[in-house]
Length: 164
Ligand code: SF4
Ligand code: SF4
Image (cartoon, rainbow, N blue to C red; front, side, top):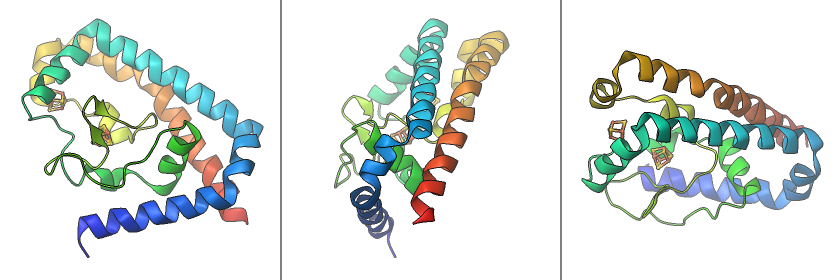
């Protein structure tokens, strides 16, 4: 099975889950609370990325076409994470925009509002050298809240969706 077939099967399954559970997920107070916590933590980490200079450094890398958002990275997006993106009103694409890029890479970068942890805490050697140890530590610490919320949100979505 090719990666394109795997991702299209996964998207079909996610759309099916969404069709069946959309209302329930949208009305569940715990899901909404975790979503809020996640997005708040995500924004905090984004602000730290901006302040440390990591955001501009990675954007330059992306413009040169050598970003780490490469093909196959979409395989790190599980069903619950994609459902969480639907809850955030993200429109999931039906095809890859860049042949060598991740399926969820758009013109302005990643289109997902809830992203896999591996995408968030990956710091390549070039970025680590640019940041230096202190800013690298600050950046890593800024992701802790998001990582926690991501885990709890995924667990909650799975528990609701698998229950019925
Ligand atoms: S982490 Fe490294 S490879 Fe990935 S976008 Fe940033 S600079 Fe580029
Ligand atoms: S950050 Fe988004 S576009 Fe980049 S690899 Fe991760 S999921 Fe794909």
